[in-house]
Image (tube, rainbow over all chains, first blue to last red; front, side):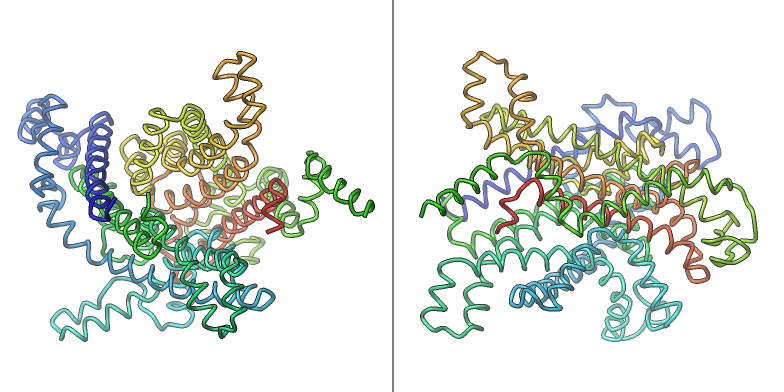
Length: 325
Length: 295
């Protein structure tokens, strides 16, 4: 099968998954006790049955389940995720406003984790009895066991309370709202450091351990021995032959982990009041703002599906052996 | 020559009889695993036997808020309401450990069932069940369980179910691949030719032999369920009437710049617990898969 055909198949399957996600969310929200009308009535300080019925008919909540579901799916297809009565704004607009902040946090932390993880993993594999190896072992235990919000809070205590070098939270200083673009960007980068390091800490541990394991496996294989036997410089054996082949597991895991990374971002955003999707999700969940919650679940599933497809394609491109099936 | 031969025979006979006793020896030879086990037992004693020695009510306001640790007779200090943190650590630990264990049980039950049926029957059943698993992998776990807790109310039961329902996919994958492997073994064919029924084959013949990797995975599940519960209660999505480690962190969080210890201590407890569990898990993994160790 050609790459194009596989891609088409994966996208078609991704669409089915996405519809399944929408159906599940919609079903859950319908069977849960209480609905939008109840929350609006709660905000108004109570309402009688007549008003409740009017709210329900205005939002189409009195229609049969299948009709509501069909309506919702067709409006999503038109990129309309509904209207948030809590924020008084279209959900699509709300989400698009917050998405860049989350993507910035998620991708920068992943790049940091992969870069440092690769470096540490390779160094540890190169010298099994070295200090680096010990660091990787320690990091991988810490990364799994430390709650991510705790890591974040410890960093705040260290770098904000004890030694104040970083801002406590937010994404940009309010005073810079009219400043030049590069000043704003520098300021955002400055705010990004702590959340990025916090989120990266979990995956740094995973990636360094994984790189070490796959490097050790590759280094024991025949073709590496051949490369060494023909007198290739050790650096070349390492970085050109071995590293290339140990990238596969890293890409696979990085792709598979992506839905967990989004979960981690939700917590990190809450710790550092980073104005992204996670903060929006938490606020709308606490406010029972159903359209926004569903929109966020839909969008984050979409992001995960897209990343999974991309991972699959990258794997096929870097490793010709997978192309066959 | 004959000496070497007998040695080889010895080696094979050792490998063949990988008994429980050997696994225990294997486990106890692993210092990290033993350290983890001791740590875990200490934590269990602290959490469950501690309240007998230290009887302060965790919900009672006993002193001025934010008394530093080791002052005024409060070993771990007091929180933002002036409640004893040491008592909160014990009471909260009971809840955190219980939820971790229960949620892991839920996810292992779902995961093993899905994986076992998929691996045993193969074909269309496998295809459908694995697609179902993939579907759950696409859902962002924490967001989804936040939604479940918010919709159905924050009680111990909903929190446990919400964690269990989103975290079974890894168990299902491990179980399926073990079943795929063991299904082809001769003793399964032998049992089948003795006209054993499917359910008997799945749960009495194959499952016991597929247990080692599942046990390791289940053990890790407990650790990640504790972390999961902590994250949920940190975000304010847990039963407000029940104290857990995550909740102590969440409720003291607004004051981190003034009293970091009220947040650092429960976080450290979670860290130690999950660390102990994963050390024990690594030890189990090595003891149950001696082949992996030789690599």
